[in-house]
Image 1: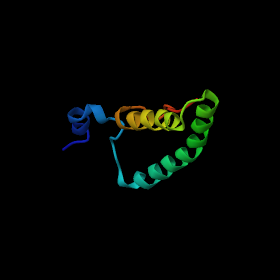
Image 2 (image 1 turned 45 degrees about the vertical axis):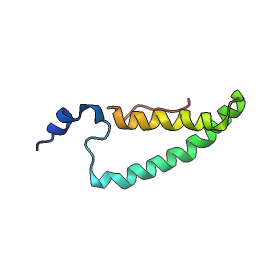
Image 3 (image 1 turned 90 degrees about the horizontal axis):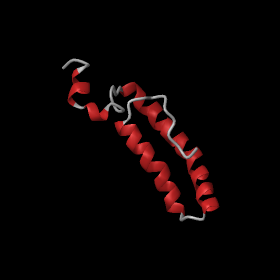
Image 4 (image 1 turned 120 degrees about the vertical axis):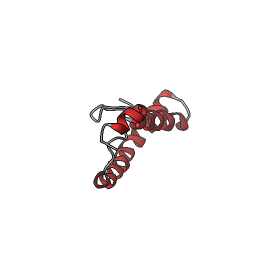
Length: 81
């Protein structure tokens, strides 16, 4: 299997490809850091807006998970700002 075959077979999951073992731990650490910064931010926004707290958590997690899975750019910022 060549390196271009996974992109042709699974074009929907370009955000996950290429996946290397060396980058798994730094990616997980980056995700934990992002969550530590983003959770208080969205909780504050939901308090200001007067909506339930779970709304802020959903609006933070779902777009990040979807873009991390289906997005192709590693430089796009997805967040509450």
